[in-house]
Image (tube, rainbow, N blue to C red):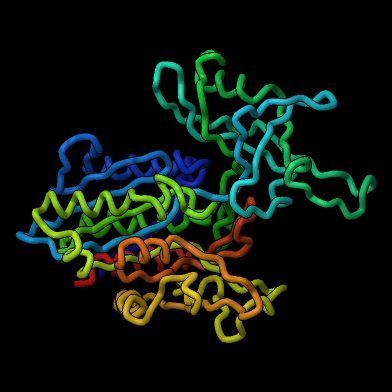
Length: 407
């Protein structure tokens, strides 16, 4: 395979994706540029060439090979959302001369990493005329630390400590950004995000939302490369980028919801196939960021499973099924990676350190499709600013491409 990924655009991709809704639309733009057609979910289902749909912050794509009878589905899954602070329905209040934003904690952010950073407010707004608009205010808010002179050991209270200050009432700012009247805004799904653009530092990317836009970007690049190649076999190639993973995936656009199953069932039936027979010939790669060993906290890792930055993508294992990897799915993934010349690392959590989870076990449970959990190793996961190796991103794209075209 001759594939030389260019990961430099990931900085622009992340900057354009401050919310899950923006990330889904950025993926949609790339698919449109590759001649994919947007599917109207209320219309007759199309199962020829490349199609996609956007549902809120989730985006699904499917590409049907030009064969008489496609065999199964080959799926790359990831999620578009990242931890942050979600705006409450009535988000405006004033205190001690400041305009502030009433927020809830979304997911599990390293809360203090968001302090003293310029924050944007981004997401979707529903207007009185029934239309939906995406908004990204740019740097407009800040959560200030308390000076140590006032408290040497301040405790972070998720209700009182994290409400950002802003120069003007936030909904007026949103309205002005959109060029509408404040009264036109009926409802909204808005989140804060670090407004600073990502940067390259030697062979590393420093940016917000690498969990999990690193996987979204890598999966998209591998997918577009596979579709454009002449190496694909007789499987339908599927991208499944879900929302709400950081809060458990239980939503209409999360992995626990019906969106992927809807796509697979309707595609199979449009092809005149039984979806369960296709499931039996299918596989899934759940792509989500992994934990690189932290040099200052190496004891938090299992001593024989310590992924290093720059040493390759990670296969993730957990005996309690917090990850979906099992022998057959691992073999398929790692054989594809080896065929692409990509080194693979393995992660198992320290027995005394609780393990997170991903969309992988949820997808495997809902559909019964063998799934493997993989990702690039990160430092500072869930921080406002995370760190990943350029080489790991490049190798991840190569490995995902090899998985899609492995015949």
